[in-house]
Image 1 (spheres, rainbow, N blue to C red):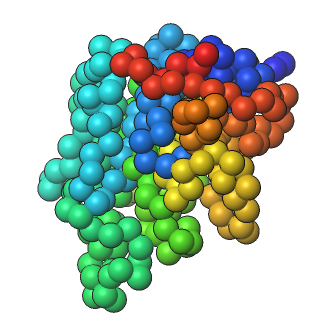
Image 2 (tube, rainbow, N blue to C red):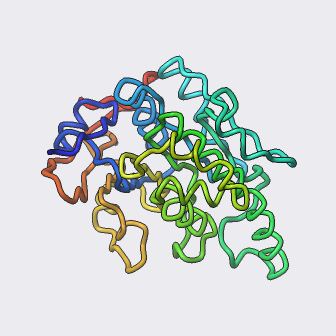
Length: 293
């Protein structure tokens, strides 16, 4: 039986992808700031409403103080008001069973304080303090994902990842790696164990009643590049350990010369396990989001 594809919300792009994105895999969307990655991510997340009955969720890793404007875009493009999940000092994991509290579409795990994104930017004591703070936030991060999954969400968009010379130097990539492998790609009951810990046995029956298959969850990772031109992105080498090397699907978004003007275009650089279009795909950014001609 063929795997049901997840629509990107953009029919022409779905067609170029052989029907859409493949659930249970990682898709990386790569391009410079302002090229349209967030609009594409929101289109994919919103398309979950018609396919799975639930919109997708956004996890924002921005740290440098520049908002990604997800809420503004979502309301303008779809009339969709993103509900934000707040981080609190006293956290009760049982909130995941309450749809009203658990079903939020947006979580920003860092305060926007202008902090740099590389480990080398911090003194050793600052890095240790940051890791301690992050561990305190992970419980609520796990609850955010798990609480949405048990209420039917099957799409995750991770946004706000800023460019560095090496992925391994970026603490954003360390957190992404944890989220992807230890949350998105983990059996539902093992993720519940991480959340409830010593209280798991008391919640086990409810956990099984709310079981979901992690292989149905699609992940879209929006990766900001140094490269602006699409030709430069296409020529960019994939290093061992690079996030691109682990992706099932890679979508490159960049600027292209169109006669006497500069336009935007996309290229499907990788789509493992599926036929895909080899064409350069022009698109425009409008008030309604990303439009392919």
